[in-house]
Length: 292
Image 1 (cartoon, helix red, strand yellow):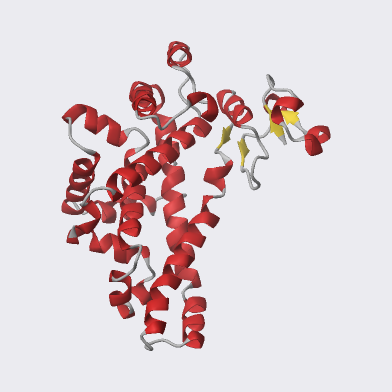
Image 2 (image 1 turned 180 degrees about the vertical axis):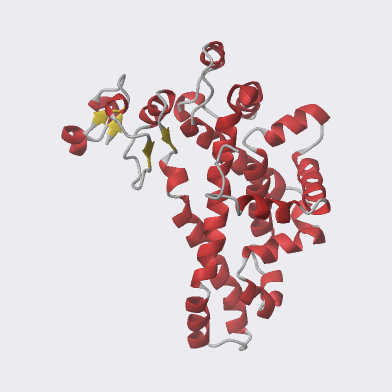
């Protein structure tokens, strides 16, 4: 268990583990993978990151499980419609679920791979993005959606000091911004008519395993959470590819709505066949140097 060097056990508020907690500065490892929830305080993650360590937040490191549950529930909702119509029996459904396990795992891992890659790219860009990240935080505060103190994010003055010292946001801080970017974009898209555009049918079908998408297309199109699934897929794709402050940056530059940004993203993504290009780049993982 880790706390920041500036935190007391009382501030951490986890008395059961006081005897085995150390500070982030005591860690000699280069990387921390946080398998449990709240094993490391957010201040400790930030301190570890500012001292050259690499770690995400627990929410990022454990998001695969949440993602998997999300997909499982939505698959079962779609198949429930087929069972009600009598075109699928429960034993056959259970067999199909088991047979789709590996593909569901691949879909979930792919999504989470892109999410952590987004953090790596944002961290690599470092100070080049800090002004955009600062304005994104300010925009969230203006909408009453962010409390920097609660989320352990630097104030405008603290951020200016960090920039002057040449210290960009850490992975742990970027993870918070990434989450807010997705949450806010989800709300903005689902409240618009974007999910109703037929163009996003491929995003809807791509959320489900191929085997199910072919046989149960009608049930997927009739899914009661169809709009939310499309919104989730598109928001994930856009933020994973563009980074936390991408949408806010484009809105500032153009004066257009988040819905307009999403539509334009879809036109560019699909018009230039970017998913195929991304797959070619991702296939080089562990083949060439990661920084390249």
